[in-house]
Image (cartoon, rainbow, N blue to C red):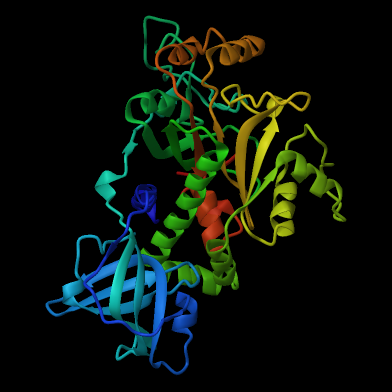
Length: 436
């Protein structure tokens, strides 16, 4: 599997832009701007001057020559850039965004037809993994809370052979975690940007192609976040940078799936990477579904949850580009989501990212940081006693914040084109099945 390393690296790539230039070069006529895909597809590369922009996927420095592989999302393959060793710099690192000008020539290597001989390399955005600000938190697997509020929990009890003096081992009912979000919210009060990557569990009685009882999630929580737009930018960046990392580090594995399991997925994935994700409101989504000529098993109506068939239709309607659906009815979402105060609809600042072939991949929201709003919401739900500790967080230096979770197995389904989620995890657990 591609593992936590790619996800950690991708989170660390989300940084502010700053620029610096390489050594000066002589003046020339303006270079023709090419995408990596167009550069790789050039049939008669004869030294024409071109400009390519993208992200560094690998760096190899020799005594007199520097090799870079650059990708801009337009192609699964990267363009090799050959430069003089004088260009070498600590800023030319994996993940840094660059603009390269030079001559497109035939390559002597059998691995590619063309390469770009660089005259100028400008670092548009530096990428220093040590200065990203995200802290990896190991959230507990055993917990006493139900973060999602859906009641789909696995309860944990001690073996009958173990004798404990109390009624149960922990004195309170405990469960396998459905999300590390609430624990991340605690830690975001100290470290500003935090994330976790680990197993989560849902006792959902489903044998569908996109549900598991045990699966992995990457979750992030960010303090001083005040808008869904900022949150969606992080979510889109995570998807794209993680995918580019996987394509760069595991090209053979991805190509194997695309060739034998999901023909055409390569083009679909390139389409996702090169386009900006779309944004529609929940209300707009319901109207689109109501006007659809397709007959749905579940009739779409305002106030009802979106089902998988609805999510997939919305993505198709949007041209097979991932789409954010925002501002869901308050009644559909957990207590911690921020109230939009938009009567009479009464929605919360929630967001789901829908992707081709899968449907919902990310779920996130702004969190309710206002004490009295959260207090009233907990009271209406009868949860004040269980979540008094969570309410107390709002009394001592609380700040606007938000976060999200992404199902890792669904992510693999999306980029590899695998139809059944049980085929992307070695030991799938689902209702009526727990082998080994």
